[in-house]
Image (tube, rainbow, N blue to C red; front, top):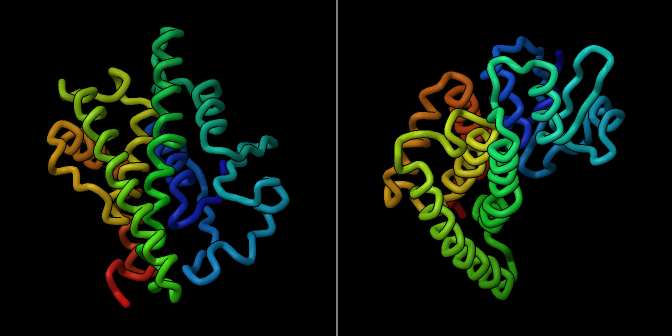
Length: 224
């Protein structure tokens, strides 16, 4: 099994964690990235495999897949133990909805902070627009964090047992924290959930590598 990943690719790191939690051996090829050019020029194998031209791309024998959620579904069917989705159909559906929430409801607010690692925009109006969008994102994320704090208040996971929903939300929250979004300290149950996950080797490895990539590849927030 081979995974094409990226040092600051949230969705690739989701797949890495899933493979680690399932105990699956894989070769990882890290696609080069710079802050100035992103993933340009695109990796030729990624271009050949994915019309979206993005990582992650997973190759398992004669099967090539892209899109982290589709890869999750394949791994659960092809390598069901240990499970990362509940067995009950309704519980599985709720868990998939929580993964979707991480990717498509919470993460877009983190995107509003991307300007924070760029040099200050030369146009004052654009700087103001960026800061206003960031403030709206802060408010929305606090609402999401408060709701998630209640869900994990019993000391468990988002869907009862560890699942793909936890992987997706963990990675999304890492992005909010690395871009200086709302701190988790105001949400003690959510903060404890985050630390429980980070203590697991696949999660901790991904978090540490992202932090190292930030130091090496991105402009520190607050630097002119």
